[in-house]
Length: 110
Image 1: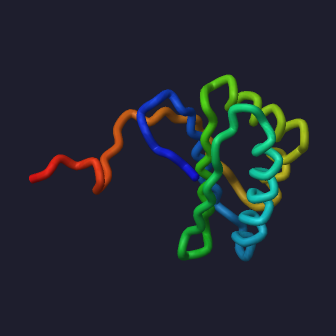
Image 2: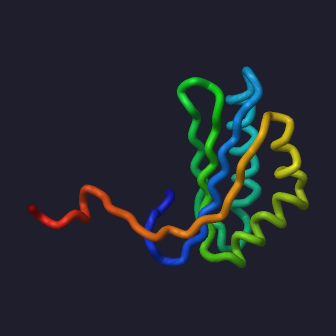
């Protein structure tokens, strides 16, 4: 389960614009890639999101730190999983660090 907090966790957010009719196929492919990544030390979670209009998929994946993130990327490259994404459309990947969170349970009483 993803945990979003300011603690040095590295988050990869990848926004895919999918070819027509390819959204579910990409979701299935990314789920398989997540299962491969799950064996890498330092991997924490993956969450897949589909746009309601069928044109986009967002992959939100977390690793303990930058070294773990690099190991995950290296493993997926070695397995051909990252290169295989291109068959489904275009992607815009990035690595991020959480700098602020606020949720219903952590708000101060008013």
